[in-house]
Image 1: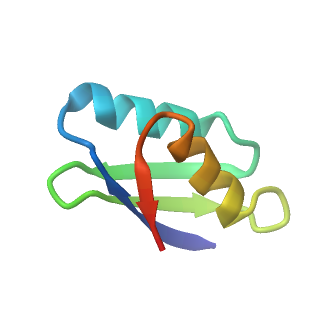
Image 2 (image 1 turned 60 degrees about the horizontal axis):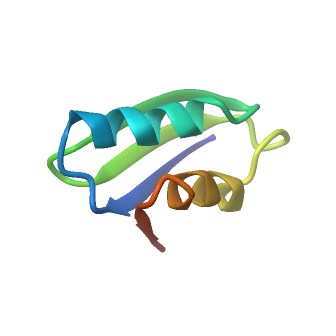
Amino acid sequence: MKTTLHVKGMTCGHCESSVKGALEKLEGVQNVKVHLETGHVDVTYEKSDVTIGEMRNAVINQGYDVES
């Protein structure tokens, strides 16, 4: 499965690394591509292992807002 998270508050390479790292730690996440300039984060994942809610929470726990 693929989804795109809309993340607010990313402004630099450290932000990008934080979001990417948090998502990659989740079991079931296969690939993460952060588009810093647009705030979009494309995630490829295994639906049976991880939910979009878990991905949202991982990003929120890094201090960023995730739009629906």
